[in-house]
Amino acid sequence: MLALFVLLGLALAGQALALGQPVAPSAEEREALDSLKGVTQGEIVFSSRRDGKWRLFRVYSDGSHLVRLSSGIANHTRPVFVLGGSRLVYQSDEEGPVQIWMAEPDLSSPRRLSPPGRQEWFQGLSANGKVMLVARSRHKNEYFLRRLGSGLEVPVVFEDRRLGEGHLEATLSPDGRRLAYFYKDDAPGGPERGIYVVDLEPDGRTANTRYISDGCFVSWRADSQAFLASRFLTFRGGPGTEIWLCDLQGPREKLTRNLDWNYQAVFSPDEQWMAWAASPLYSHDMGTGKYDIHVKRLSDRSPVRLTFHTAPDMEPTWRAQRSRLPAARPDFVYEAEDFTHEPASVSEEGGASGGRVSLARQDAPKAGAVVYGQYDVLPAGYYVARFRLKLARPLGPGRVAELDVSVENGQRILAKREVLAEEFVSGKFRDFDLAFSSEQLLTALECRVSFFPGVADLLVDVITVKPAAPPPWYQPFVDIFSFLGN
Image 1 (tube, rainbow, N blue to C red):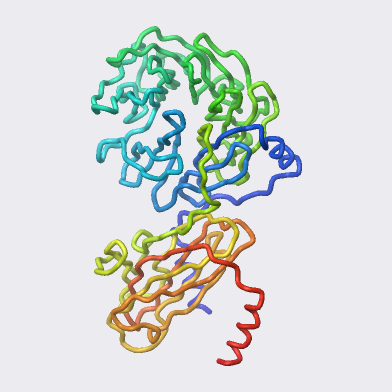
Image 2 (cartoon, rainbow, N blue to C red; image 1 turned 120 degrees about the vertical axis):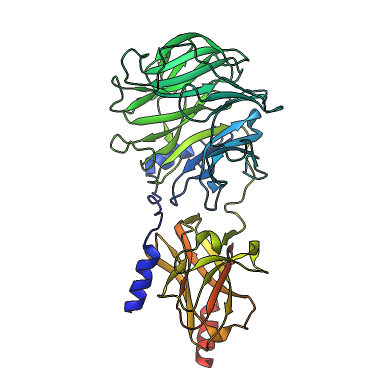
């Protein structure tokens, strides 16, 4: 028993813990969602930290068909539908630095748009797909226009000479002829904190700088004549923000009135609706706050909440089409080397998936959880987790490992089993299956391998989770007869 508690402690140590839990909509919220059926069109992609990593999720604009699009150990953020919704641009650190990627709307066929090794952020793409605005940092000298055909870059030169070393976040208009930017700097003599619009020349020069409003988070309308912005309720930031419709002369109409934090609003494809992220006043932080995605008709004061989770749901983007995606990916594949922890290490191994394994040696100084930390999110249902393992240098029979499937940061074990040395053929991989099920959303799901030294070297190759059919009604009787037979 003491050893078990030690193993659980090791498994929980150093985890990037999942944030929050799913929550059930109230009766009033369910009624509001029902009112969207057949009224709103298209789908919304957003980012969320539900499993400790930033992932991309897809939901229909009526709140149905929630699907997680991204997985793995990389973060995926800032999704933006471009080219009429036919492509999805997003940020990812899967090759190290944060870079710009483009993929199909379901995140298939991804390709990197950023130069190798360069960190940069996506700040807008012209409607014709020819010019992209990128930022290497939030500084006035770090913005560039890149022509996607040739790769040619020109620096953006901001006209306002008062701009200092403060935070500047710019967004390219769909026609490629303007920038809207938010500037914040407390240095004396600098421009007022707020939103500005400038005209943009093809060579990167700007002109005709005009102050629009206090606020931040600008999202352009397709005609490049208006945008949505978050304006502060009181000067210099608090408490709370509201979404406003602004044009090139200034604010025109307040679109939210709930006195919370309202950010990152975007237009629907028909520009009659908007989607945005909102959080209560007490939960402002964008990395941990209780933000959910909301939608509303621009002419209507009643917002409808689309997502229901206490982790932050941020950065919505909306397109007219709907992807035909299943409720969950057909399987989830975890390369053990991506989730390796001491006393194991990553090792080259012929015949392994990807050519590498997680290797725990028999002379390790202590037992411990050597593979864990996927923290995935799966819908309720029946599944099978398959662990591909191999032994090397066996000394004799005995317990080598314990496999388990857990959720909620290890607080609930769905399935587990011991692995004995005598179950292997030396030098050959073997699959071990763990069946599990849940009637609730599976949050922070982990497939874990705990190692016991002194018997053999353990090689963990790959773990695969696949949906499974529910057991037949007579399965309990089969289990009883099997137990009696044994």
